[in-house]
Length: 332
Ligand code: 572
Ligand code: ZN
Image 1 (cartoon, rainbow, N blue to C red):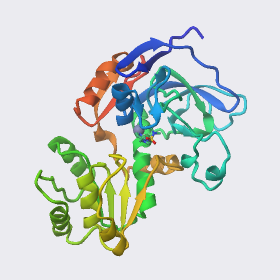
Image 2 (image 1 turned 180 degrees about the vertical axis):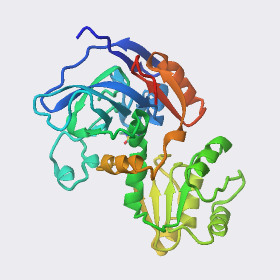
Image 3 (image 1 turned 180 degrees about the horizontal axis):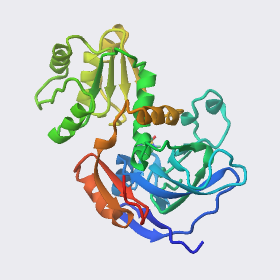
């Protein structure tokens, strides 16, 4: 194919280049996709800024991006559920082995999983990208490409809610990292019933009391998305006895928490590692209109301006920054 394949390639910390790469042929179980919309995740920015996350170190150039949707242009010989022209959302984690985790339905926990834009695996912030067809999900006509790309972060939320046991009528506290009025406004618009902005001098137990006052009860479940020590402490104190604290945000490897308080009140502390089996539910949530993710997209840049887009995300401006990878279609 003589077609260009502009890609956002991270060479080393601080060295993000927009350059052409070869277009790969789909294998028997793969599809070649023309990328449409790719959201920038905090982890993409972290690799750009630091060249690593924990033990995952960038050792050779890697294409960034894992929140993505595109259109099928070519299918491998064994693919029967997709055809050229289909619009799909991409699940970036593809298990490589049918190991014990895979057999238990927890393929996200497999140590050998392929994951877009986790070194050394390439991501999909490019014009053309090849992916396992079984991890590409056809989008209904009423779900946009951008909504398709947002299924990835939505999946983190679905998986966290599943593992926490969130159900109809659950009282849930979400600790988010944002003290910005604009972001909190969008949280309210999208369904938050009450909000509490933390003040610098508030103690964890004092805050837990405030949460109870505002909600009229202690939350049964707390989803902790900040990773900040004081917030984890608040989450544990705030949660009702017999409840669950779900740790989603990542912070320091070692953290001081009121563990005995949680233990004697049977507050379970759980974690998440990405997600599994979430795309079909997410598509149903978006297609039915039960969940609205559209207001989360605050900035759009053409792929050529990926560095500016990364700078915008790094500065904490807006909420979700989308890169538009199709030269001829920059629509949502
Ligand atoms: O959307 C998936 C995702 N996962 C993140 C971060 C951002 N986006 N994780 C945090 C980092 N870990 S990791 O185990 N790792 C680099 C593989 O530290 C994975 C999950
Ligand atoms: Zn991510």
